[in-house]
Amino acid sequence: MALLPRLRQLMRRPSSASRVGARRPTKAARRGDTLHEDALRSMLSDDPNNERAFVALAEIVRRRAAEASPDHDPLSAETTDTERQRAADLAVWALGEELAGNPRAWYALIEVARLSVHDDHEGTLRRLTTAAERDPSGKALVEALALLREAGLPVDALGLGVGHWRPREHDPEVARQLVLASIEAGRPLEAKQHIAALDLYPNPRAVADLKGELARDVAHAEQSIPGT
Image (cartoon, rainbow, N blue to C red; front, side, top):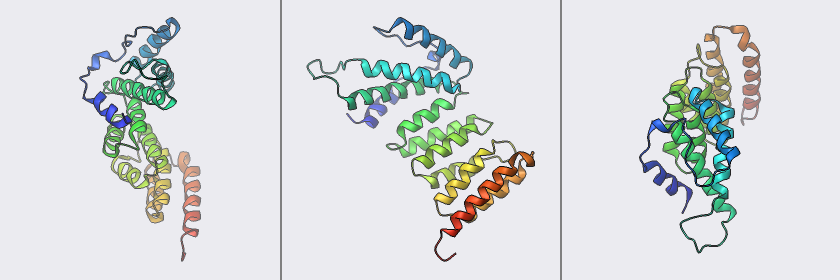
């Protein structure tokens, strides 16, 4: 079965936010992994956006899922690499959705969006929007815009960024992502507007170098436009 239908089946299963921070039961979990998993889940319960803890926990569930034998067909041959990868992705998806039950969690939403970006455009944008709205610092918005740009979706990045960027409050790196997305979308004039918006940042000296760097990027992009 393709990944997206499997993920949709997973999404339709009832879930409870009360599971956040609790270890998932398993029939044959290694003791070392079990102790490590409990510690990581405790860390994520305290800080649901602890990137290092999420990555480490995702690796545990990914490895466990990839090593598990498929139980839907006991007569099937040895699990293929593709099937193992699919199982691992499903496990990380489930973990991300579980942790996203915490209303403070945005990093898990970013990682689930990363899994769905090529198969579920609408769902990806919905998750990234929620992530951006949950984080007042702007870091989630930076991650969301970078993800969309990496997926070749600069116009979607601009739509998300323009609607959620607060230049006075957010991490100035949001401006970098918006300027680069504007360049990639062939909109150098819009890129200049994003650079100008950095004037609203309360510490001008902190963004001076960034503004200069981005201005050079825009100038280089304009030179590449035919007729300029």
